[in-house]
Image 1 (cartoon, rainbow, N blue to C red):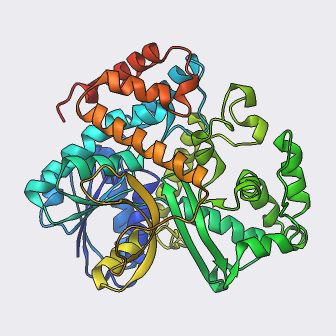
Image 2 (cartoon, rainbow, N blue to C red):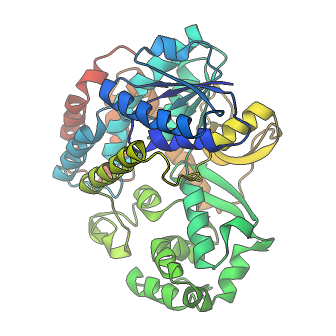
Length: 450
């Protein structure tokens, strides 16, 4: 198996993916080539990779390059994890959106900031896909870059390259639920099915050791059959108070219930649980994130700022440099599914993963996040969700299809219509001026031919 990693110099995903590939059984002898446009970042992650290889010399055959053509030669799988413009442009687009009365809780998928990210990442991923068409046309593109769904849709619609999107949000929610229920992850069998759009998907099935989460939650006295009227802060306090012996039995359970309080409230209301954390899915819900709720703060929706992201980057950089200086320091598997999925694709053994894939390649059905049994899954899945949620998801899929078309065809009028219908963009005080500003921020990519 020959693997290319595009964007390997990133301080978060770069070392993590390289480490996971090195530690995953079944990938011994695979070839991994690291590529980045930033020479200093590539050299730093190369030193990290060499420290890993010195410790585990019989695992991967690694190389690095600043040439995309060389990185793609004879590849079977291409991993994509990039951030065009980095946090500098993200700070600009979030500040611009707030100037026009739109405030994000995350800002990487939906709303003006999500549209802005799509404006600069769609041209980049289509350029990579077209390079792949001529250099490695049979390779599979594994994308982890946000906005994930529009990027997958763009590749499927405007190239012949096979592609999948991977997101770790369902795993995060399951991990918090296990902590909340005081169940050890290593010995608990979890059977989960998801359906929706990336960062707005829902568990259609969720069992722990064969017992449905609904029954476990009822026994914890956290389930309420009636809707809770009025402000949600009292409701959240009630949820936390009714978690019963699960919270008392483990201190980590309190933080997990706090983290998933909005998930649990929606579970009480809809009977299904969101498969991602509130700061992501709340942006898709105008009734949760709007001026009247102080942009989600009224519902205790956490947000992540650029300042926090920069601190995460500094922390990740310190960890990289520490391992380079101390190659015998403890290392562990991250729990992300990229390396296990590559192993599954290599050995042809059916295993289940949460992936983002078009419902029917080449059509406009949209990119759906769902669980798939690799090597065995066939056809579409009929989601077991309330009709109101399905209609909302279908509307989001159509908006994302319009975003892809508008950016690929450089159609600002279509993009403006999308902005006005977007769950967050509809609150904008001047959509035209905001879009003009976003085009200026992304003019380097907007002016490139796709």
